[in-house]
View (cartoon, rainbow, N blue to C red):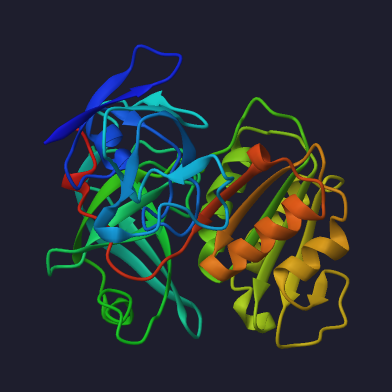
Length: 344
């Protein structure tokens, strides 16, 4: 049995099958709602229900700490009746935008003791269309996929660069150190709605934890390419200094924006006496260096716990508007099948 789901204030409506999430039904119908993890963790897909009833998929919770009382997680709920929903935003998906490629390993470099920078080349004459901040799904080989953000800017469209942390026992990450030049990998892209509002000139704060730096690097390289000028703060967290594994990229942005780019390395397990270092977690560094966020935009990428701590601090104590918090949560484990989520 299916139910009809309509978006309030529009002529958009689509069917949602039994035991299918509202988010997946929208994506299959060619409508993209805000989302990131699709596992009920990040809260990006939270939106309102103007009319009708929903239930949790397989008994899952339809809310988390990021939801207001009026919101539910579209990725974790299924209709129990016909619905009218009130998403924060929505847009039609370009049917030709998402594509599958068999990419070839071009370079595999160890950037830190537990992080590989994996560069992939697309087949000759093919290009990947994506927005800075989006991610791809990579086929692991057992029928599941893993999600990795593109670290390169969109203008480098014949290649894909991924920052991959080595997770012990990881279905793919544990294999990464053994990948050789010429090895083939099946990928699909783009996914994700955490992208930059290029029309805004407001101050922007980026907060990254570990390899959460990858999508932020893509955004900043894209801003540099397009010569976008706005006040920028980058807070990058790691346990120790060697975890800040691409200082050369930071140095490039410091040269690009000498008067408007500020960098802080937040080191949770190490004290460093340096102008750009902070001893503590990223949320503590954010409070120390950005005590007033009203009128700013904040992009946060990292683990669920880190993103939650930054979100809570920014919204409850530092004056950031909820609509100006954008998060990409890195969650271990398989991604949902792309076939379940995209237009046929």
